Length: 113
Image 1 (cartoon, rainbow, N blue to C red):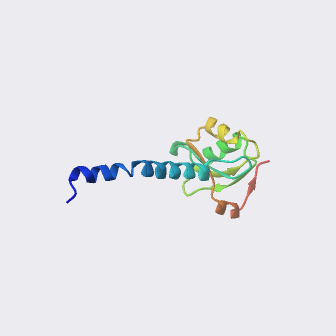
Image 2: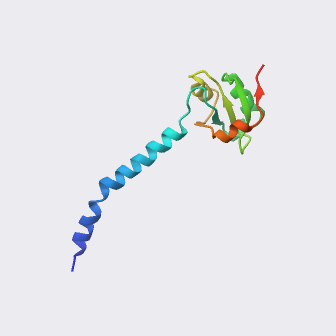
Image 3: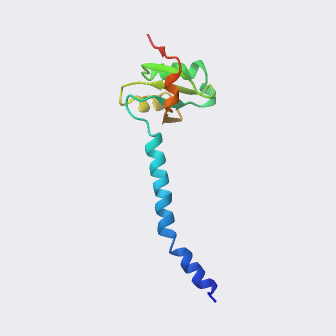
């Protein structure tokens, strides 16, 4: 009959595989959500900077297109071809900037003058 010691030793053998699995999941998630130049992004602003303030912040960051607000008034779906656009959104107070889902492209586009 196997002892408790051998059972723990067996579980330790899976530690590298579990570590690799966790690393792979984090890496894949990062590649999926990392903003890419010229692609739509979802900029998440603090709740205090919602609605018109979030819209103005995205425009001030150099948004070429502002598609819509996300599910909350502090989430703005926007796009710019400038490679520094995510950094500019952070400079305008965005908490998180993520690659926007492609479903956001079917929203009506509002062009900035």
